[in-house]
Amino acid sequence: MNKPLLLSSFLVFILSILLLPHLSKWSKLKVAEVADLLVTNAFIYTSDPSFPFANSMAIKNGRILGVGNYSVLQELEGSTTHKLNLEGKIVVPGFIDSHLHLLYGGLQQMMQVELHGVRTKQEFVMKIEAAVKSKREGIWVVGGGWNNDLWGGELPMANWIDDISPQNPVWLSRMDGHMGLANSLAIKMAGITKETKDPLGGTIVRWADGEPTGLLIDAAKKFILPSVPEPTIDERREALLRASNYALTKGVTTVVDMGRYVPGSSAELPWEDFTDVYKWANTSGNMIIRVCLFFPLETWSRLYDLVQKTGHVVSQWLYLGGVKAFLDGSLGSNSALFYEPYADDPDSYGLQVVDLDDLINMTALSDKSGLQVAIHAIGDMANDLILDVYDSVASENGERDRRLRIEHAQHLAPGSATRFGKQGVVASVQPVHLLDDAISAEKKLGKERAEHGSYLFHSLLASHSLLAFGSDWPVADIDPLNNIRAAVTRIPPAWETPWIPSECLTLNNALDAGIRASYMPIFHGLQEFSVTFLFDCVVTCQYLWQDHLRIERGNLWMNWKGIERVNGRQLPPMGGSMILCHRRIYKVVDLLTC
Ligand SMILES: *[C@@H]1O[C@H](CO)[C@@H](O)[C@H](O)[C@H]1NC(C)=O
Ligand SMILES: *[C@@H]1O[C@H](CO)[C@@H](O)[C@H](O)[C@H]1NC(C)=O
Ligand SMILES: *[C@@H]1O[C@H](CO)[C@@H](O)[C@H](O)[C@H]1NC(C)=O
Ligand SMILES: [Zn+2]
Image (cartoon, rainbow, N blue to C red):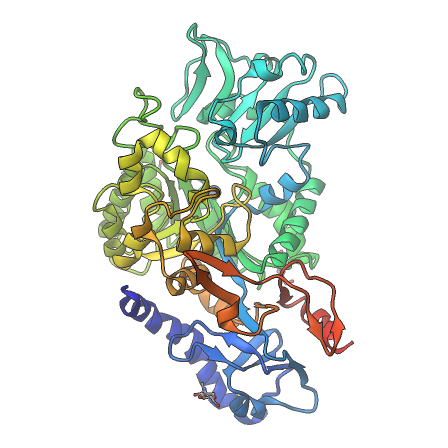
């Protein structure tokens, strides 16, 4: 493929940022610096093509002093240096998730009604019935995670659950967060009737007579969300702790948190989370992963003022990233915006959830203020509209490294993939979603349209676009290996062959997007992150790279799980991989030396 070209485009940049600081520090350090920790006898994947693997790594004050061969790094060893012999184990940089919703991820694990993976209407109803029974009359029952595609596509209606919830209002979000089901009591409390008009960018799903069915799409959720009880501060703090711990068990050490803002919800939520949860965690020593925060675009001036005061780097754990907006909804909720109507709903092209002039205006102002902009676009028309917006903003505000992002970039019109490369727009993609979407995309778009334009990772890379992987957790699980596997194989569950095989990535390209390139969209403060680039790392339980990742009959196998055996002693399973990162490093040392 175009690997040499792709790599060369990153290489200069990455090398200059990652290596040169080390090298220049390097020459200064030679005599004086003594490492706190020297990791030796490891198999370290540097993802730097000029020396992809090294055996040693020196760390001081939580930052990397050098990565290379022991013969060179041993100069950094002093009497206080702790040595950690990894006995040949593979070490990769900590994974970065370029797009997720961290507190929603944690809250989902604490949720009253968890509907992920529910495969039948009966199971759906039973779960809600059980939750209602545990509540006093009048108390809200709140949950989410359902996916109607898992039971054949039929959308749930209030009348599925009205009989079992006569005295309790119920609100259940779809797994993509773009649609939710209210029972009739909740619809009544929200004052939604057949006379209520659809808001801009939202749909009240109705029966033939105009009465609401209970489903509210995108902006229409605003009728009900103000009455749904918000999680308390304590619950949100617990959610952050749970979510961060969970991320670490999957090898994720840095995330871009797109926050709790979705169409129809309040733009205040991410700000409240910043104040109540993140600042609290930052000052109380509860941050254990690095988090880059995005805030709603409409609040850009507030972020600008804050950045003026504090800079982008709040601490080594917390980082003020940029601003995020939505242009359309999701495919699963028939609200992604397309040029052609939905095959299963010929009157609908999807929804544009914002006013385009406002979007252009706010994007231009944010960009002018130096804030990075990320906009959600799923349908082909939505993607083109954003590419146009970015094009006009770039020509208006002049040339610079701005790394504007399109979130999802899921369905593209012919020729649009090349525009990402030309315009230097980051394609922030979630390969793992294609496993869910392969079947529904053909139903909703028709086979041919789906196959021409869905999840065009190869085409995007071929046009030198910057691909960054994210999970959109809790929409999909946070495990970064799922993305790499999905991008390479494109084989949905129960399928034998890939969906759109010409768009499969090579393993090297997928690793590049999954490990290295995901640093790129974290824009300002990259320097601060990059100094610790390999310090946040994952020690795997495997010894041979080729055992670790192999492709067999079109399937990618990853052996990251297993039980460590060190000095003849069996260690407890670590839920996948062992993490070496700031708070954990001595834990691992203890384990290895006990
Ligand atoms: C490390 O050592 C190996 C073999 O001893 C050698 O082939 C390789 O070039 C060295 N790498 C670096 C980066 O010095
Ligand atoms: C975050 O924590 C750092 C270090 O603990 C501290 O210097 C900084 O003031 C904190 N910032 C905020 C906004 O809490
Ligand atoms: C953009 O919005 C600002 C603030 O609402 C307004 O003053 C300005 O005229 C708008 N600019 C354009 C080009 O619409
Ligand atoms: Zn998202």
